Image 1 (cartoon, one colour):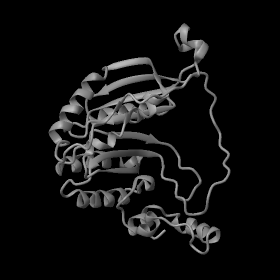
Image 2 (cartoon, one colour; image 1 turned 90 degrees about the vertical axis):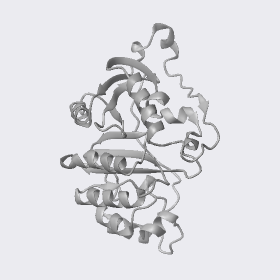
Image 3 (cartoon, helix red, strand yellow; image 1 turned 180 degrees about the vertical axis):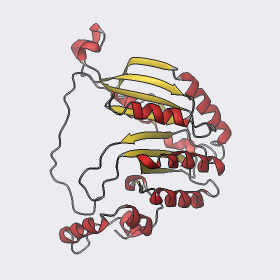
Image 4 (cartoon, one colour; image 1 turned 45 degrees about the vertical axis):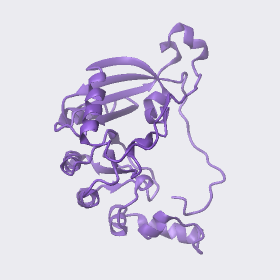
Length: 281
């Protein structure tokens, strides 16, 4: 989290690819149970799999997109000579700050209905660019403006496989307080990495973007924090702006180990941040 020094050199592994395209399978699912069952079935079929969830629909229906890097020979013949070309471009720029109240459960419901209906019931082998598959929002410059001057909050947590019911509880709680989210994403996680503050663990991670000024949002998220902690899950530090130091210590059991490293690396406390001060890191 930037608290043990400045990285001057890094070494990491890459996977070889022969094209800049992703071969994508798309499936619509009628409710949250169907979404989760399909994703479990996809655990060993695809390298990547993600589900968009209609957070304002009572069923929790969704669209699952799964894929892997396309081989050069999968591309149209005319594109194979330049199979590794990569040129992501901004397709649009969001308008100026949207007036408060425009993004509400009615407008999000209309957007989500259109988004769900535009997805095919089932489609295999569609070729998409890396940018379109992994970073669709980045194709719209300053997309955050749609949340208005109050901004937005992203709530992301992970829970183990046995606590998958927390996903549905979280969606219903956001619906109960009228927190509209047109970007609600569900993914499957594998094992954590060896780092003491690693976020992933085998199970489910849900991320929801909601307008920050929704009445009752803070109390609702506090309640969800407790559910996540009781289930053996945790919140994602890179997107957190509100969890308590107690929640942090409770859900990251290797925190003392990390703090010992920090003390050794930076005994004078030169490196700090708002996050570190809030969470007593």
